Image 1 (tube, rainbow, N blue to C red):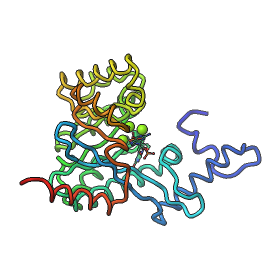
Image 2 (cartoon, rainbow, N blue to C red; image 1 turned 180 degrees about the vertical axis):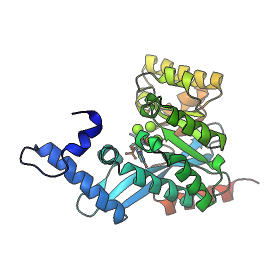
Image 3 (cartoon, rainbow, N blue to C red; image 1 turned 180 degrees about the horizontal axis):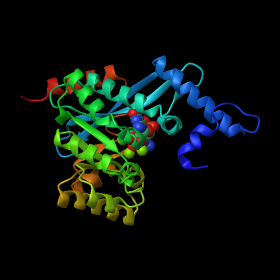
Image 4 (tube, helix red, strand yellow; image 1 turned 90 degrees about the vertical axis):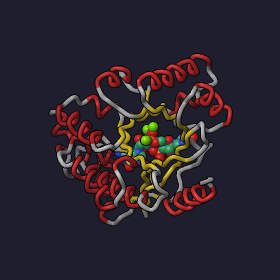
Length: 278
Ligand code: C2E
Ligand code: MG
Ligand code: MG
Ligand code: MG
């Protein structure tokens, strides 16, 4: 059977279904219920400008607060939500929620939201983004949408048109997990993006001479192309120091701040804004 019918084949438990397929179907059903019961939450992780040391925004990261499974990380449920199609309403909820939270942040503070390829392909995507901004009152300039290469692998005119439309509104598009994909450079050539987020595996391994050379090249590439480069997964001062010397613009990681509850992030951002010289 073709890929497109794959998820419709096992609609119900069947004797022949193996344990894995059954667990997956249970997960998809549970996710559906979880959205109705509002069990999803967003944590926020600060992003800093390396040169000034100031926080410029935060990334919204989804968690599932399940009464039976405990706190579930996105890597353990996003793929299932994509397969079942639930990612469309779930992602829409995340956009609305993140924008309404960011509306309470100091002026200009940016909000980054991860969006899945499945979501972008849905016909209503641009409209739901515009509506999330309108309802929250957050300006398009403050919103960053983080996409991965899988979005760009789909070279349909629809995806291209959607990305163009969103950029014309002033929304920034960031290429997440840069360097891990199949053809990162190829995509940069074909798709206009505003930001590159260097995958944290490179930062983790930045002590290695070759890795450091690759990271410096990505930073140089960003500068040449006029694309902001953000380093993900910065955990040590030594890593930050290498990135600073290489001219990396932004950093994100446990060293700068761990993902935290909306209320804690709002407090942090307000205290920073208040202590900043006028
Ligand atoms: P991502 O967008 O690349 O997010 C960064 C991930 O790195 C987050 O994991 C974050 O907690 C983790 N991280 C941040 N700083 C550090 C660090 O210094 N060291 C280490 N080891 N890890 C760090 P998380 O929250 O588990 O999210 C995993 C992935 O799930 C995200 O990767 C993103 O691709 C996806 N995701 C998260 N929220 C959403 C969402 O709302 N929608 C969609 N479609 N995907 C999401
Ligand atoms: Mg991201
Ligand atoms: Mg990433
Ligand atoms: Mg990732």
